[in-house]
Amino acid sequence: MIKTVISTLLLLSVMLNLGVALADNKHLTLTGSSTVAPLAMEIAKRYESQHPGVRIDVQMGGSSRGINDTRMGLASIGMVSRALKPTEQDLTSFLIAMDGIGIILHKSNVVSALSDAQIIDIYTGKINNWQQLGAADLAITVVNKAEGRSTLELFLQHFTLKNSQIKAQVVIGENQQGIKTVAGNPGAIGYVSIGTAEYEQTLGTPIKLLPMAGHAATVESVAKGDYPLSRQLNLVVNTEPVGLLKNFITFAQSAAVKDLIAAQFFVAPVNDGIKSNAIGE
Image (cartoon, rainbow, N blue to C red; front, side):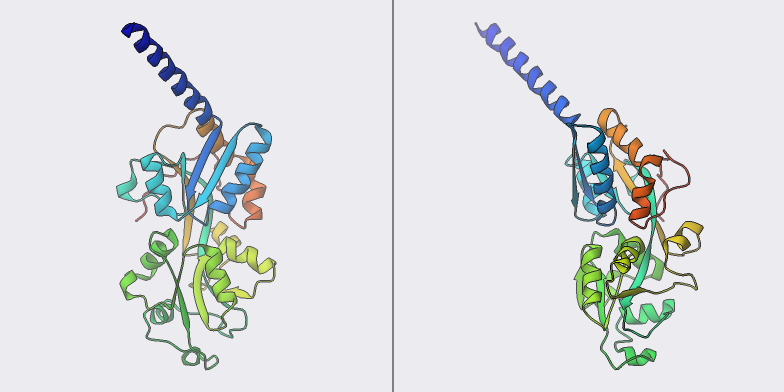
């Protein structure tokens, strides 16, 4: 009797595990970067349309969430808008696009360019009025990114700053929050994905992107390799991809989604199917 019960429980366990495995092969969860998320959503929609029965959920929360969720098994794939760090080499990343980080101002601001030194002085509070830069007598509203966002990490790295040095009046998470804040405040300055900002400009959002080191903050400049503050947009996993996981990543790196990458104002990688475990310095 006991043996029968044990055998039944084991059989049920096997059946349940099989059911979970089958369900996992029909479902993926992606979490992480708000820069990658809109592109990932479009890729997911196209993949689902070509594979009935498959469901792909995309959730934001920042690159750090993507890394942590993937490590803990809370997400099938992490979305990370930078190269992996030396401490993250337990993960494998797959490059799906390139992007840049651009400084944005309200469209009405007459300032057309800022040097790195001026940007540093603005973000550390040494310059706090646009009049100091030849513009209107208007207080500067510094918009900074929240902790855990790769955009913040790359911004600080590029300008050799610590987050504790930043004197921000507004702290935002997603790119759209930053764009909305600057678009609604003529005195604001922020930094966001160039791709997202260019897309918003086509919709008439009153923002403008400033050049950096003499190079226009455009997708074209990123594609040429000229723009100094460029970054990888990656999908990361904690295991060798198989089944649905492998198929989706392959699809996300294929020519079948290059139009989606262009529509999001990102740059498609030169080579498809490339692992991108370049170490983020």
